[in-house]
Amino acid sequence: MVTSFSDFAIRLSYSDLPDELLHILRRSFTDTIGVAAVGSTTQLSKISRKGALAMFGVGTAGASGMLMDGRRVSPAGAAMAGAFTIDSIDAHDGVTPCKGHAGSALFPALLAMAESEASQGRALDGGRFAEILAVGYEVSYRAGRTQHATCADYHTSGAWTAVGVATAGARMLGCTTEQIRHAAGIGEYHGPRSQMMRCIDFPTNVRDGVGWGAPSGVTAAYLAREGFTGAPALTCESNEAEEFWHDLGDAWRTVEDTHYKAYPCCRWAHPSLDAVADLMSENTLNHTEIEAVEIRTFHYATRLAGHAPQTLDDFSYAIAFPVAAMIVRGQVGVEELTEQSLRDPDILRISHATRLIEDDHYTKISTDKRWADVTLVLKDGRRFQSPPCSPRGDPDSPLTDAEISEKFHMLSDPVIGRDRALEIESLSSEFDSLGTSEFARLIALCTAST
Image (tube, rainbow, N blue to C red; front, side, top):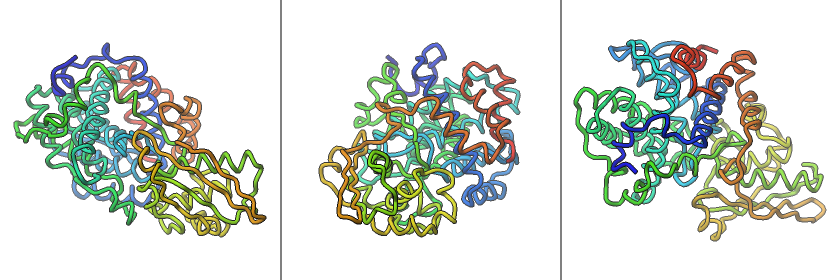
């Protein structure tokens, strides 16, 4: 067992990474780039890339291509644009105990830094990138757990992923243990302390904060390398944090806590989606038979907007409309993200007839898992109620590798083409075994324009 997070960050080697952890990192690589592909088609992504070009020119750190774009900016700029691109479609990997996401910040930030390092003659191979990525996930997840346990407000993922990106980024830059401590402190101090429920109550482009957490972490790593000092990261080094860090190096939170999404919307809607999909199938129901829908779930979930979403942001933080889409179409996928779907009269009829009911028991137990049940009320008076449901994709009910692959191609093929998608999938699914030239090819495929 290591003595501190900075020791862990600097000493972790590829031989320390267990097979189950590598499996998660490979799945997350493929899954996240698939989300980036479809995310690149959104207005949010286009705005953020335009903003990166305006604000983050190439400097002495080297150039980085923006995900699915190809134009080159600074590593911080590519991290910002890439994180917003991924976060624009709520389908990326997550961590339920932290009520958030790490991969949406880590991949765009660390890939951007890896590309800039290569442009300076310090190319990474896949094994070294796996070490750095593992540091990023472990530090992010533990910092997130600490923050949720010690802060009264519910902050976005950008707040704690800034710490993970800073730590992993400093490791990539060859920083000392003391510089890594400073990087984490800078990332935490300057990272966004954005309140998640503000975006859930009023869905907008700000999303989960990773669009600013990722560049905050990147900037912190470069500043620390140059000698900039930062206050100790409370999420890593305070007395209150110790319970979340004591088994660092012995246990892997990345393996225990990472989940994958079957649907491109907030995780809090997923137990209801799974429940209604089963009810419709098991009882051979047609949407024309449905009079009303009752969803019992935990408190935060009842605050999700969404009976008549006007934008993709509204859809992402909704339950009623995605559930209605599942009832009408039997799926919630890329086609349900379109403006035409948002105006579908059949979906809107059922969405408006959906009632969200706060359940005290579900609120109490929705900590490491999310819970809901659904009742379908038919026009003939019959009622069909599901058992309590938690989402598919959780560690105890994982999506298969085949399902991850199917999701990846559903999201990416229409945007980047089947051939490019197949090559990305092939390389990302074994990224940790790639040499420097092959890993550079993978980055090039992820950053090329669509």
